[in-house]
Image 1 (cartoon, one colour):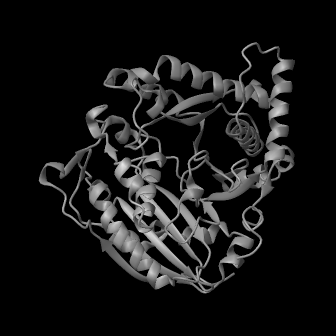
Image 2 (cartoon, rainbow, N blue to C red):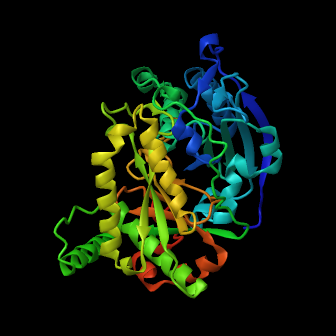
Image 3 (tube, one colour):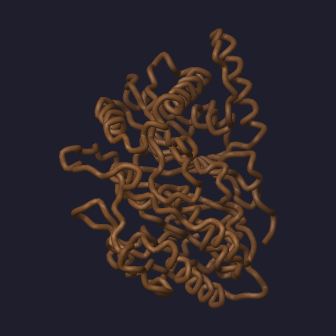
Amino acid sequence: MGTDVDVIERKMIKPSSPTPSHLKNLKLSLLDQIIPPMYGLIVFFYPAEASSNNSDRSARLKDSLSQTLTTFYPMAGRTKADEPSIDCSDDGALFVEAKIEINLSDFLGQPDTDRLNHFVPTNDPTTAELAQGCITQIQLTAFQCGGTAVSACLSHKVGDISSLISFLNSWSSTTRDDPYSVIGHPPVFIGDSLLPPIDMSLMQRKDTRSEKLVSKRFVFEASKIAQLKAKVSADMEELSQKDHYYTSRVEVVLALILKCAVAASRTVRGSFKQSVLFQAVNLRPRMDPPLPENSIGNLLWFLPVVIEESDMELGIVVHKMKKLVNEFVNDKAMKFKDDVLSVLGEFSKWRDFQEMELYSCSSWCKFPLYETDFGWGKPMWVSSASLAFKNSIILVDTKEGDGVEAWVTLDEENMVIFEKNGDLLNAATFNPSALDITTQSL
């Protein structure tokens, strides 16, 4: 498939009503400061609809986006390079219209992970120059058959994956003229009310980007996940592990990916290097009192799980992840509110891991991504795209909700070894047809 995505128009969509003067500046929290300057992004693929064409869809999306930005006003603002705040300037969200001269079924039949990047506006140099400081970027791409791809990109400085989904829920509800969920669940911008920002100029973060990164997609079906869970149970019994917890599908999939990635690194390097996985933990339900689901901000913590050479059994990796999460939730998460010293204490420990092999994971599982309906039905496929960060893992539900799609980004040399790992190939299918896991025809 050699056809490129062609950009038709780039336009700033401003809020339908101006932001009040007292809301013009949103101060970011300490948690927002810690997050690297990147975009969280999701791509939704929709089949053609007889009752509307791409021009109709574009007009509806732009109009509803303008209305949604009135409530989600920071999403129409700009980041400030010199201070931890958002200028809620109403400059607008960037809306890109594009087209591609292939059918949606051709793309979904064998998803091209490199081409997938062209469905998001953040990878186009011309768009990037226009969108400097832009919080929100949207792209609508029309396929030859009438199907569409809608991508949503939100600056991580404003919010996490939960924040992006709250925005998408409101935007899609407005597009299909269903204001109930918008009225009933208005966004709550946490900002610095939870944890005030600090001067972080002296805290340098190691750059984990690389020029030779490869992102690939692996799909774990429910039956294979069940086998992995059985293997974890067997490992626990063999180790006489007393505190054997219930194991989730996300945990076993993540543990296997980590185990195989560490093994690949050891093969390429010629020796084992101590590794650490930064596992994202949602703080909203774990605060005291809990924060509402529609709280907007980076309300998560990346919990470090150190992997030693003796930890390479699947059950051991799962146990370490779960044990540390439970300890964090029970002993530390609730103390994060208004306790800058506790957060800084945990953050300072991250510097101890800088000489280790660093991995990070964000799970989108259990979020209602396949419920994102703009008025022309639910998506056929929901996807991530390639990330410019080494050793990153994103986990997404399959459409049925019982499997897991994993997007793994590794150094090119490591990926060659990783994708041939026998344990991985026994449990996952490499980049299968997206039609097979959704529907067989358009």
